[in-house]
Length: 110
Image (cartoon, rainbow, N blue to C red; front, side, top):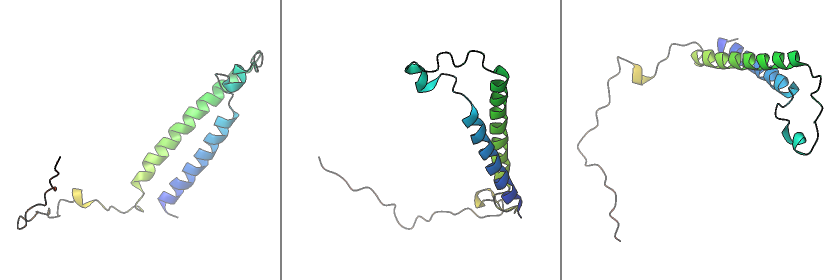
């Protein structure tokens, strides 16, 4: 199993956990239910520590996912040290030939 595959599996697990944590949270603005008179006293006596835990876990999982995505970019080519020809110091740059003139845009009449 390649390193990229391991990163891909970890990203999928973190994404699933992030979806679960976000779905468990209550909307802070009340959403549409507060517009129609619902949810007026629903937060009285609510548990603040659960909300804090869910907020921190959301930010933590999002940070972990971002780091995994950035680190997986290193291993996307299967761990090979292949570089682009743009950055290859041994490659010879292509020099355009000037034998034929460059095409011009057709003239338009008004």
